[in-house]
Length: 73
Image 1 (spheres, rainbow, N blue to C red):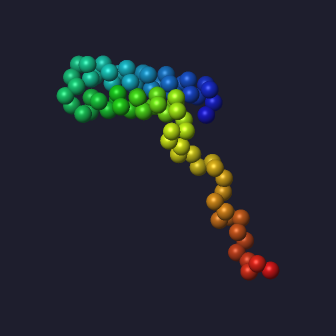
Image 2: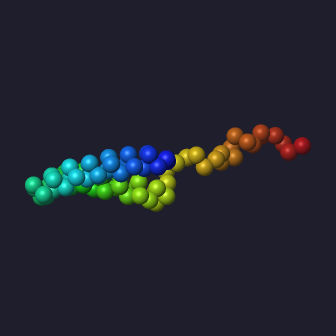
Image 3: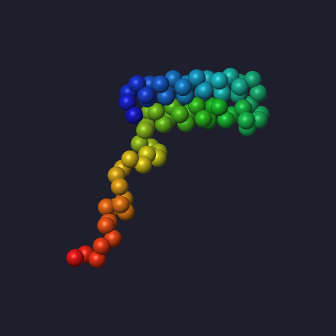
């Protein structure tokens, strides 16, 4: 991801996290009030450490399409 994409991801995570923090400060007894805070924190961690959880599938072909299926002659 580009630098601009990571900065945008940090901003989005900060906004969601701030919203979650205001919800938790009002009433933190319900688990649903903690969800925006947890999601915002996860977005921020994902932007700061992009290799922590790598779910991209662009690491090349697994080899299944390069096999012609011939008998090896």
